[in-house]
Image (cartoon, rainbow, N blue to C red; front, side, top):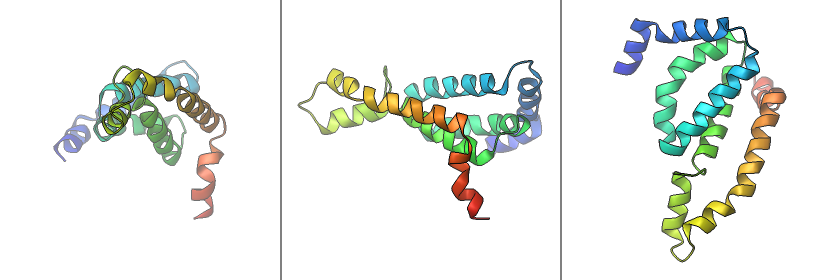
Length: 141
């Protein structure tokens, strides 16, 4: 609550939104940068902490760029899950290594490669066709 109050009073999210939306680049470049940031943060931090720290700043940016907040939430969750299985510190991989004690951690990291490739294609598809993630919420109105 204190962080939310600080963000409201300081108007940092609005400033960041106007700065990023005012850049003379395509909005896909901005979302690619945000996705890269989430991937890197997901390698080292817990997903909930990342969401609580970044969404108050980035949601106004996404709204300013014309993206749907539902779509952005789905992208965040997908990319954070990708970050939780990528080296050097994939938290979910270490959980698997703790459960399956006779399999080396390197084998587990090699085993996630097909899933990581599928996740990359899935996120690219969601970015290229946002209606895929907005279809079900759209029919619920």
